[in-house]
Amino acid sequence: MIVTIASIALQWGAPIVRRIARCLASIGILTMLSGVLVAEIFDMDAIRNPSTLDVEVLQDWHPVEGDIVTRQKLVTINVGELWPGQDFRIPVRMVVPAIQKAKGFHLTGGSTPARLEEDFRPNGVFRELLNGGVGLVFTVVQEPGSYGERDLARAAEERFARTLNPHVKIQYWAWPATLMRAITAAYAESAHFEKGKVAVTGGSKNGASPSMAILHDDRMTAVHATVSPIWDSPLRLCDRAAWKELDSQEGRRGPFSGGHYGPTFNREVLEQGHTWEDLQAFTREISDEVFISRNLKNLRRRGVAMLFHPGTHDCVAYDIAWGGAEHPDIPVYLGANTGHGKRGHPRLERGQSNKSAFLLTHFFPEEISGRLLVPPKVRHAFVDNAIEVIVEFPDGYEPEGGSIWWMFDRAPDGSPHYLSEPIPDDNFAEMHYDDRRGVWVAEIELDANAGQIDFFSNYLSRVKHNGRAYETYLSSPYTRVVLPE
Image 1 (cartoon, rainbow, N blue to C red):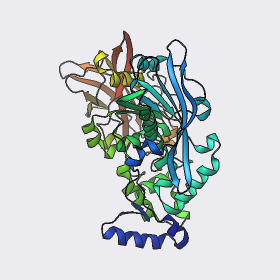
Image 2: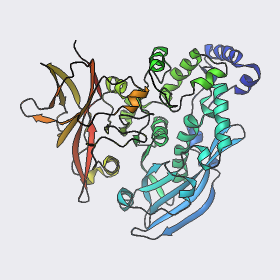
Image 3: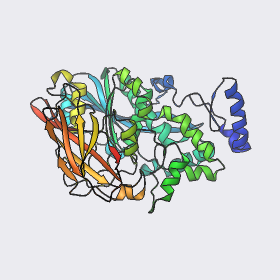
Image 4: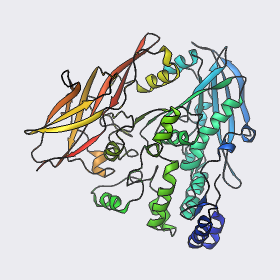
């Protein structure tokens, strides 16, 4: 539960609020977070309480015919209050097998209110999940303005800029809470759902929201997120040196590069009288509640399955060079030249079925042949006018093949040229397995005029379920190497 004196901030100003906050924090009553008093972002007892959902039934449970028959229900629920008197309501569609309870479910916020009004017709991996007794839950994690709530979205941003209260910012509280409250709504339907695994997937805001929610809600057991934040790089923490380098780069910078967990809010916050120190305090204190990278030990202790597709040229996941160096053990697939609105490299893995394989492996491990890969270790050596890239997987993980991509003198993370200049078409090669050393290798001829090289390699494995093979790919850590003069 957020404990805030935002109303005092509006009347008396942020400096007085900060003084009050420091006094209370000093005696151990609350944690001070840049003028906002924070006990925790989410009150998990309230999140899990079905009595406060205020369910409105739009379509009660009914059979839906098709190649696979299902039972479905559409409701709206109250996620909670963004601020006193301002409820945040969203629709939820629940889908279960026709003749049995669903045990656990796949959850995503990647829908719209209009789409949810129509009965869902499952195909592909959704059909496989339902046939195996796993349910589906769909809700809405979208900009409120996209479904007629533009004034609400604007009011939330204005309140956040004045108060730095994460509870009133939709991306920090409302969207992750939406997913968690959808779980509460589904499990309240005890005649149709029983407790089981909950895997959450999505891209962009629907990748960021589950990546944050899973840190707080142990009912979630897996996350597959694309083009969304993973780690707490210096740009995200408002490090002034990182921002100075970013601001020095030529070209137009969009609203995401440099943002903490989404669009950049620095300017709006500074215009409200806050300082860079306030921004740094906010990002520093809230990041444990936000980033996968800060919670790996706990997630692994819980047995959470994770796979991320950040893209190599994405405006949201714009810091893969930093992440590859600092968090090489986070499982990622780097689609070459992918990201929001990107077409991909000509040699991109077009048969990639990572999400389907991830979900099937998570829900039906005993029915799967083959296995998903885990992050390998990468090292390099200079050989004459070339660099040898050496990649080693743990024992028991044997890829079927691999490919490597590279760039010379890539611009800094988040910069306009970092996002706009693609990996050249010719900067691609097959990896080769060295039986003697038990490693995958490739040799890249160096550009005599280059000062650095970035590279990563992708590896194929196939998993089978019900006689069908799924191609999966995992990347080596994205690596940046300064070249000898």
